[in-house]
Image (cartoon, rainbow, N blue to C red; front, side, top):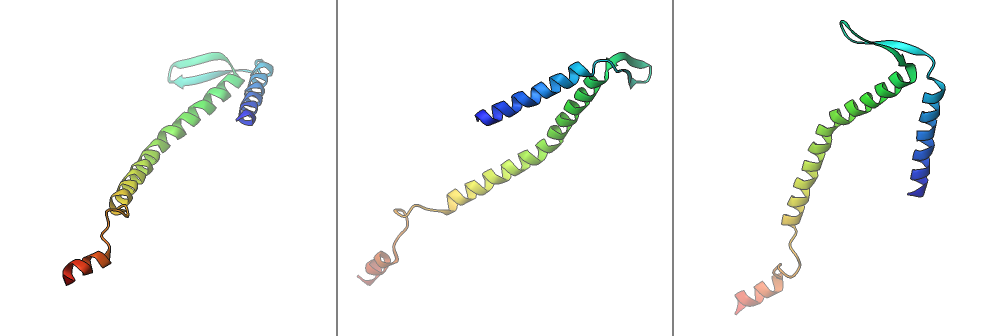
Length: 101
């Protein structure tokens, strides 16, 4: 847990240093025809593009995740209903004794 926290702090610091040292190159971003953002730092454009790509990937994979979770629940339900505890199962020896009497 501590290792993960340290790794995240290092990653965030690297991104912050990247943004701080790359403020100078500024670009124009054309979002829609006739709508342009001017003087946007290139580092900010890169980071926002990366975050939007991650969000798109997560959103697109949510349907598969939900599908697999539903399948797991269905299989767990089937497994729990098909397996009876040993106390509820009748022993074959007891059946034979009852029928022979």
